[in-house]
Image 1 (cartoon, one colour):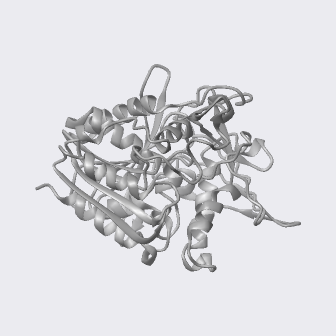
Image 2: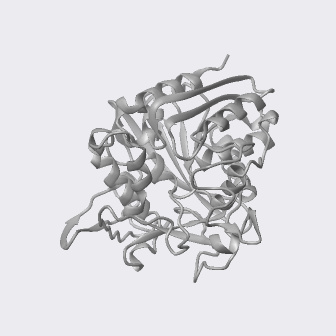
Length: 406
């Protein structure tokens, strides 16, 4: 995530002007369904490039949250959207992605999104090589994508009015309780005693924190491009930056961060573009995946079309906690984790640091097994890049790891 002092927008971009407006019919248990039992939604997109406006009908399916069977690598993958209760007044959106054809090949897998973009937009895009969840399901894993409170289809308490001057919403302790609620529900649905967790970016921090506090519930843990702490120094976060307390530059000023932030479709590309070591970005990242990613991120927020340009909201608690991690402070200790652990860091990642991988490797003293490796040449968005740009290796390593029950 690219950080700016302007609290009214998480990121700004000058390279180009792309705006999407998505009008989404929010899911309601009583809303109309099709012959497959999928909720019927509509999506209309508007794109502006420079001074020209082109209107087009966007049929986004999975990117907009439609559930139902599709093919993934020749294997039928089914989807089921449901809700899970967390703390009082908090309801979490969860999507199950599973195969009817493949035999069970590992524990149920929960995917945890990062600081800005929620679950479906991160892991289940309706574009070739855009759904990590479908690829895992085709490999025989029962996958569950969750939205943490404040994101996507989950409860968004406090995301009204002006976020300025208010403490950041949704800190790590609350997220751990949300993960616990989803883990318990998945255990009940599948009959599994333990689950696997995969967290991307801040999601890896949250998943690791949960696994350290509830070690008996987790059999496998995958941490992808995540901060861990124990090392000072970060290109965009940490002491001395625009978010620090003027009286103490080593501390975060939460009022500068605000309660929540806004992100446009265009703001999703600068950090991605900057980390791709080619001038020809489409050679590295499929434009169809980028379009689906942008559309699904905007579709995740029912208020996105109320702003110009359209933007989706995300709590800023993840940024506040990431500041602590980037300042050398740990919010949890990996030594309590007893699961099998796979730590992956992309070579061109702008978020995590090599020291995070090494500190995790050092601290995972009680883990059943530990594999920590660098994905050479890959970016922070490796699971959304083209297969040959690191995505295939990520999938093969993660699937082999998740299938290991030794």
